[in-house]
Image (cartoon, rainbow, N blue to C red; front, side, top):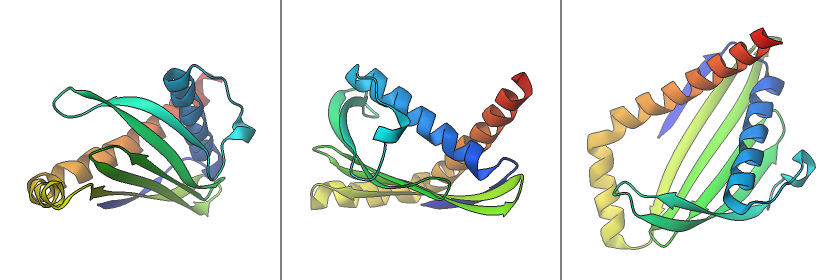
Length: 149
């Protein structure tokens, strides 16, 4: 699934949001303080996530790409499979960017893969709507934060 939206924020503001979110997630998940400089390609950490049925499971987060103001790609590996998300940022002008958000899933076995593909047919429109909403919420958060300064 892929969504591309133009946002009225700078590439620096958007990437700072991603970086701050990562730092907060790492602190919440591991009880470790890390600096912005620690976040880079190859960084991994463990976290606990709940699945759609509410059961908790351990997930390994691996940052595959981390190019400031351009690209962020991460994998979330569990015993169920691997979920990959990415943000690709293109500068349109001084105050506007285009962000392409992508999400993919590779199941751990054939049955889970078929189940995911079947469910994806039913929920694809909802997933796209959710991704667009997330991007718009990030834009709104950045604008509100800028207004508070």
